[in-house]
Length: 427
Image 1 (cartoon, rainbow, N blue to C red):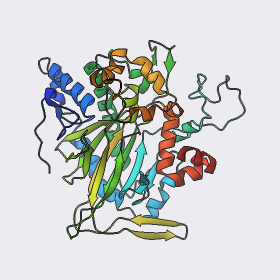
Image 2: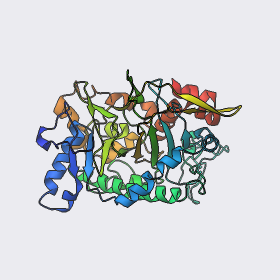
Image 3: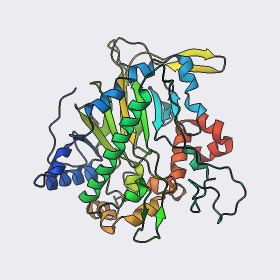
Image 4: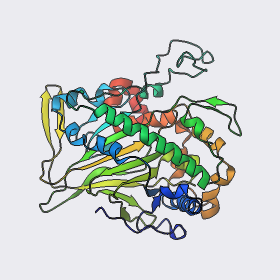
């Protein structure tokens, strides 16, 4: 399906939605249309947590330059993929073979490459410095930042495919990454306006600027590392019987502040759950991004911005095979089919790893943090699981991110962080 479902009027949106709203961002530049756009955005964030955006300003050429290279990327020889394996990276960047990642204890039937903002390693092993001396520096200025904390090991460079095998891939990815970064920052400003949050409140989190929150001293954060997954789901099988299987299991995003998903082509699979427990399809809409919001956004706003459970279903009656590269390396392979695979590209807007949810809340007006309770009453405000993300153990975003990645890729965690750390985060 590649048509545009009819967008709902903002006043009719509810948690029992039957399809996702479409926001035309070109209305933001029209003074007569902007108020209605912001009202629609506010309603979509509060009631649904998922929406399409069109006329977003990302050139089609920037998108096509990357999407056109996806078939060649996933067709790389098994030995090249093995060299790019995520198990080689303490930053959890690189290639994951078919069904190597798990969600809710089950294998996700997809292949993927994880890339991110290209940044240097900052993690330093504990050298015995006292807690107050600052155990590491960035560009010569640690500012008391403890870079020996394990979560700083998540930050580091990509594993790039050989340029001679996919000419221009790195340039195409970088251009796409930079364009989505800029879009994500401007979109955050629209969210601020929609909720009457002072313009630029969140800039300190993304642009390395010094900012004073209403309840804390000035803080300078390291610019975050945004992440992008390049995903390939197996083609739908045309034979019968057809079984629905887990492309990725039901989850809320925990990899960033918000997500911009580009669905390549016309293959469907993404579904979003509403308050009645119904799974609502979110099919590709031409020249659009699907936008949704992470656990951190929901928890920091105490539910004013909804993080919504979603999944990807694939239909196949094929079991997967493996390709032996060496005695120590077996690469799972997706089932063969004459149908088209489904490609998608989620961009996860990152947050500083040393930021805490408590700090984010200190930047937010009380009027935002009480919206959900005022609307639904204190008894039901956390009924959808907001409170589960408020576990004080995971107030640190770095800690929650390390937990997320280890739980998804236990083999990578064991290799780089050790059994003791892995068992702690698996509890």
